[in-house]
Length: 503
Image (cartoon, rainbow, N blue to C red; front, side):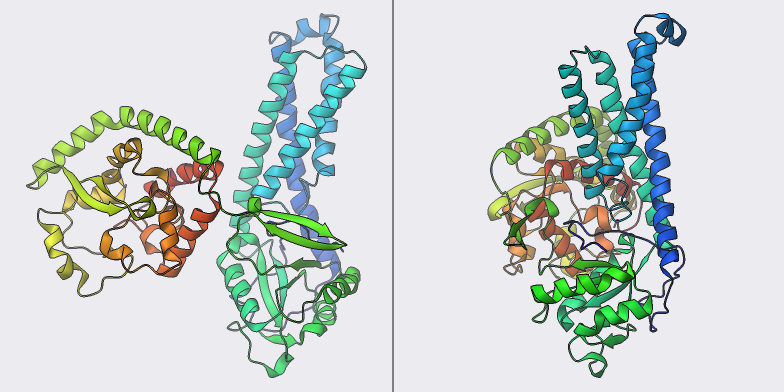
């Protein structure tokens, strides 16, 4: 039994348990062999993908080194030597990924942590190869390494991405999931349970909770039984075949109690997850530092200025410039159709609120009939919240609905990106009367430039409830990275092709 130390949530699975919505009944004990079976299945699946990716990459490096003529290469003095090096490299690379924990069932499908471990193990291996070649004075061909490493990493990450998609689909069907016991205070157990239910891809099934007061207290989660008091959790996990015990922040969760939990859970093979009292803080901002044997989590402040923002601006300008060149002619054609299908200008201008509350003029293709802004109150029917977009707005033209469905009307905002009013990725810009309703938390949306697309758009668009849209926006504001922006842009293409949430 190992105490989980990863910052990102650990992901595991079970092909045996078919979950209910929350669990609903007291868990039935399951033998350890069943848990070992699904863990081995996941690891074996990842091993096959790793071997295939590495063999292809190393073979490509060998063929490039010998001008794509395998027979000639074997006849050259160093051809056979490089064939032996290739075999050893494949074995060493596969071993390095295993030693580096990249195939641990705890990280498979977890996203960032899985990628970090795979990249770190690969770079460490090639660093070791460089040192060995230097000490042995062996001149390893640069063309060989220049192909093997980048191609291998690309294939490894692509293979892991496909594995993650399959794993998430399996978990959505109720497979490869961990029976989980939540331990802690009522409010923190409720919050974690809701998040686990929402994040189905993480693979946790909450089958019971242990809270102060035990069975005499009402359960903080619907249809999930209270199985006992906090201190009874190890015994309950042992009797019930629990795969993971998640201890949340509470007055009773002392360091000594958590250490005792780890000792008591060792015979069961269940994982112990310690959940700090931190919500919506991305793992790159977290640093775990041991202080006299106690892990202390440091939280780096959000980066609202600095080098990252200079790179973000350069990326925005480059991509927006290229994008405008590519879509200029199609946009002119679409603008012509807008003019033909309804009276009025093709381009719609509206004042929105941007960085630090400064107003700017936003550009869109017009999707409503002329004079639609004067009819806003009628369309809202007296309801005008922070996110006020009506689902069936009668002011939208027939062609406008088509433009909105595929977000074609948003493309002129590439001009806003070039001007510096907006970024490619960020919270969507809102009008003044919406911003006037912001509370202190929502006002943090204005700490970054608004975006052409954002995290909430690739997570459900307008179908998301207000609290979830707000949470996603604030998460982005405090945890954005350039790599994350690129990921959101790639996901945006898929979201645009889906009509869900677009109106």
